Image 1 (cartoon, rainbow over the protein chains, first blue to last red):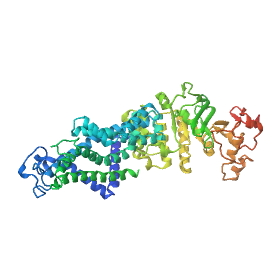
Image 2: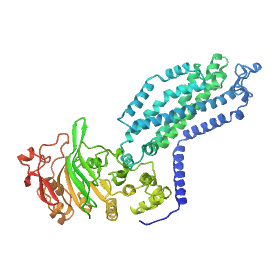
Image 3: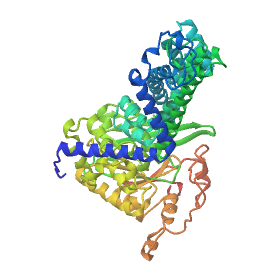
Amino acid sequence: MSGATVSEVKFSELEKKVKRENWRRIWFRFKKSKLSVIGLSMILILLFMAVFAEYVAPYPSHAGLYIAFKNAYKPPSIEHILGTDMYGRDVFSRIIFGFRYAFMMIGLVLSIVVPTGVILGLIAGYYRGTFIETVIVRLSDIFISLPPLVLALSIASILEPNIFNSMLAVSLMWWPWYVKLTYSMTVSLRNEPFILAAESQGASTLHILFRELLPIELGTILTKVTLDAGWVILIGAAISFVGLGAQPPTPDLGTMVSEYSKYLPEYWWMSLGPAAGIVLIILAFNLLGDGVRDVFAGE
Amino acid sequence: MSNYTILSVSDLRKYFTTAEGVVRAVDGVSFNVKHGETLALVGESGSGKTTTGHVIMGFYPPDGGKIIYKGAYELSIPMKKRPLELKRDIQIVFQDPGTSLNPKRLVKDIISLPLLVHRIVDKRRVYEKVAELLEYVGLSEEYMFRYPHELGGGEKQLVAIARALAPNPSFIILDESTSALDVSSQAKVLNTLVKIQNELKLTYLLITHDLGVVRNISQRVMIMYLGKIYEEAPTEEFFKLPMHPYTQMLLSSIPTLSEEDEKIKPRGIESVGEIPSAVKPPSGCRFHTRCPFAKQICMEKDPPDIIVNNNHIVRCWLYE
């Protein structure tokens, strides 16, 4: 064999180049659809507002407990573009803080649900035909067979109703879907020759699961994650609406809709604002999801 | 070529239970592979040749028989329970390089896996070794940072060969490794296989249905039909003096280009019918349903081993 000694520097350069090339390709496919670019921009703007709510919101102190009765029940105006509520708080400012809670909910739920579901799905699919598979699949079947909202509501009602517990409840009903998705993909890939090749060469199970199987499944999983992000908000809002989620004065969008709906129809702007906020964030994630799907569909 | 037996298979059986019944894919197969040779295992689709290879690899356990490797290792144990040393020493190159390379991994990752698992080289020198292996099979190091879908069929198969070579094996199963390639890349892959065998003293078990490939690279041939081996001979003799009617049928069905080729073909046997189902294989000699010379006894009893000479064995009642 000829000993072509090539420096490690050169190889790492080449590796970086391949990675850049991959990102370029992903962006190329993503930007083909204008709607998904709009979705992404919307999310980036909402995220920026959520992170810097204190600076973006015109009245940051209005987020929580704040009372100024002389300003109460003001319709939309230049000072308060979405009007004020029954305590005189600026609705627009509260919605901006509401986005912060929305993103926190998405982050919390998905960071519990996705790793749990994906890892269990990979394991169940890889150990197909064994006891491990039976346990994981049956367990997720049980959770899937319970009506999701009812499950979430009962958990939220057993535990102290607050935003964290309601998200825990949402997570508990959500993970089985990631198990199902990853499991079915793993089962169909499990006996592909490239898996057999890696196994026959002595690759560890961890390597097979996370280096051989996961990269192939990642596209589909990510598509589901982006599409699910909107659903998390919706379910969270529903739980808050019935009073088992975040409690006033937390500026949670669902809680706000619930709180302000009592003042319909005279003071319509109060509930219209947060409801529009929910719609906006779900719409943004759905548009993004379509783009993500297009990126991976071509593979 | 030394004569020691690297792999010894005796009375190997593998049955699959399907909705239609029990498929006797491999039904009592015995053979020896000598160190440094290329032994071809030839048969139509459904003859059980690939199953034989996969059982040796340990993809599924045999239902009977013994496989002894290098006189010391028992290969009936499933792949996952084999010692690491065996996973290093026995490699496989699959039929379709499109599915045997992970589409999401770069060529350098595919080839470095066995290098890292078996600690063939120091971690920091892995890429150099990968480049070396690629060059050895006739690909430049530029291929390291490409994905399998960016390569042609022949190039992919060369990557698969480089992967198989990476852990310094002594025995490689070539499972229809050239069947899925077009003729020009087939030639390149075959030449590479012959070159590395000679240089590295490798032993090949060549599983194929392509008699042209057999003629070019193997020293011995075995003909498999419905889970059993019916003829076994050195390659040269096999083409000159095919004895089993099935062998004669296979050889006469090779399309020929020149008059000379036509002349050396055995006469009188037309390829008829399809391979019967392995769920209910014919009694006696399994070929009797398609054999123009079938006698009463062929339908009743398994044919005996007829030893033509030292290396040539045929199982057929005609020579009894």
